[in-house]
Amino acid sequence: MSVLSDLKWRYATKRMNGQKIPADKLENILEAIKLAPTSIGMQPFTVWVIEDAELKAKIASAVYNQPQITEGSHVLVFGAWKEYSNEKVDEYINQIAALRNVPVESLEGMRNMITGSIAGKTPEQLLNWNMKQAYIALGTGLVAAAEEQVDATPMEGFDPDALDAALGLNEMGLRSTVILALGYRDAEKDKYGVAAKVRRNSEELFVRI
Image (cartoon, rainbow, N blue to C red):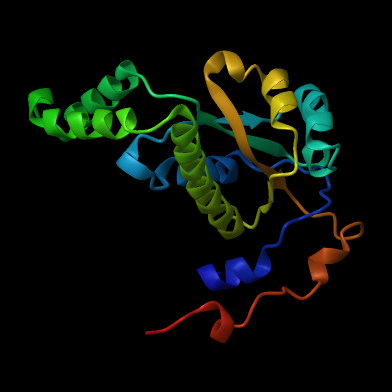
């Protein structure tokens, strides 16, 4: 299907049937998330890919027992970095130098730009910045899932403190930001699967100049 057909097909699935996603489809979705653009390109988040049924049951209460968590095939939890470090910046610069076969010294200007941008922000601003980058990756994952004909539900309705504690994210310097539940729709239980997609009309949504 074309991208537009894919997006017309997808919806925020409310009930899933427990069917597992084929490994190749899952990897394609994860690769798309990996390839999503981020500011500076540092990908300041970590994505937990949860398939284990016991762990999904453990975190369900933090997500207010929404059924997609336990009925879905996989649950992706996007955890934004709480802070940057010189080590992370150096690791990124060294990766660029290695992949592009350029001297590390030639990237000193870029390194200074990154560290300057970080130094100019409060911890709250940095976390907010990083959370926005996670949302870009989330959107890319949603489109990739639709292309793979895998149902996907973006979820903000959860208790981040409880989820962070359940997954040990605090110890990793992460803050849970958004969840993407992946699986296959239960057509009998989910009435929204056949409901008309409601969007604002183009004349209201777009300002053409």
